[in-house]
Length: 242
Image (cartoon, rainbow, N blue to C red):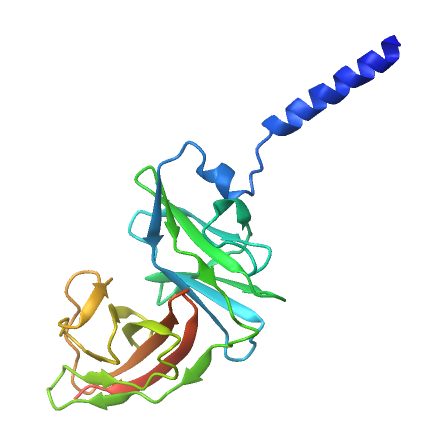
């Protein structure tokens, strides 16, 4: 009888210890007793052109941000707003546009939701949930950007949306051929003019963008992003400043 009692006590002790142990991979445990700002990380994801099973999750790291993290759900058939559904996935973060942006890159056999995090000024910043659709809706790639240079050194870029139903916003990056980002903007419209922010709804450019140089070649990258932060289409085109 004493042996049975001891065994029960041991079971209860083990159970208590298990309950007290935190899951270091859980997003909910990571956020516990911390100051958190939701929707504070600008992020989106798209499938790669040469391998749709490979997904790139882009994010904008604010100056001074650290401890970049990525959390995933087990499938797409869960509540994306419930942090209990997310666990950390370990992937290296890679510099994009020479570090102005960063990305996680991975291979996935099924669709799911992601949240990107980083720490800044003692707070944990989280992105809105990102739904990857690399199986049902792979990211399209195109080069068809119309460039009007009637106004010297202020090119006007226009493009056609593949699906108005899927689109929520456009992200435009003007960079050098060496991928130094000069201008990063968001618009609701299918047009953007360098140096003109009249229709820009979000600007991540660091200060005033530099002047274009006559005769120099530049690159324009445009991402057509859905409401759930999936990149429907990516446009990339080079041009020579006039």
